[in-house]
Length: 303
Ligand code: CP
Image 1 (cartoon, rainbow, N blue to C red):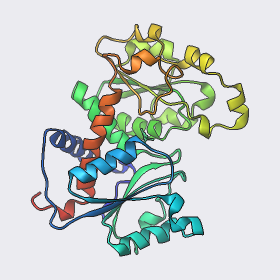
Image 2: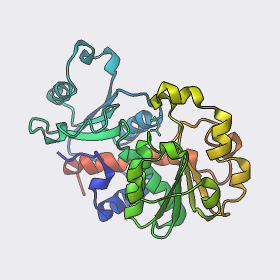
Image 3: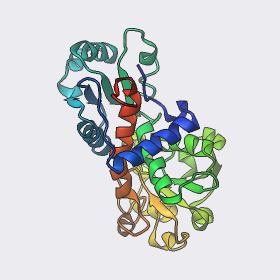
Image 4: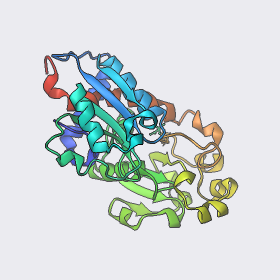
């Protein structure tokens, strides 16, 4: 069955189709499946947006949804992820949405011929966050109706960010000029292949999209945490009001959230007129409806 594991495995045309489908769902598009569909959500890492918006998307599509709590499941007795997936398949699930701290949790599983239900990656460690990438693309497309030629800055804790990794690659492929800023120590050298490392101050006035990232203190080692201060980070790398004042008039502010207010972005900017942060969350429901109907396409009544 079709999976959605890494947005970069899809062609530009397929991605544009999914963006279009998300827009259609936002405008009220209805679909019907040939049979009752069942999906289960397994979140091994915390989530508010991704989990709830996948569930909202499932409910809006008429998919019966199950939320499996890994903490109270038999994985606590040592059952593997692979056996858990096969168990949920045997019980009758058509689709599993999984967030796991292991980068690439799906690599082996997607090759297992005994698994023939759709797997959707809701975030893997510091790997990919493909449903976030799609909702980010929908949000940028809403605003600019194109990607080619846009200047997009992805700013902050790049090394820990699966959002940065999945967004940078697809944005570059769609023709955007991608820039990275933030602490040099948090800049993964392999990002050179997706864009250009700059400072926030040399790029802020040239960007169409200012995408700020959450500082992921939970993924930092103890030595770095002990040296870290919110105030220093905000002054050196954050989107302060002074920096925001230099942005182009039509530039937008994005952030995958959760937001550390006054750490990576000034609190007042979160709800400012240029901010699309809550719009991103709203688009997340429609992007996930598009993802679920794409992977379950063979069960659709009229295509
Ligand atoms: N943006 C995002 O993935 O948020 P959650 O961790 O709350 O799902």
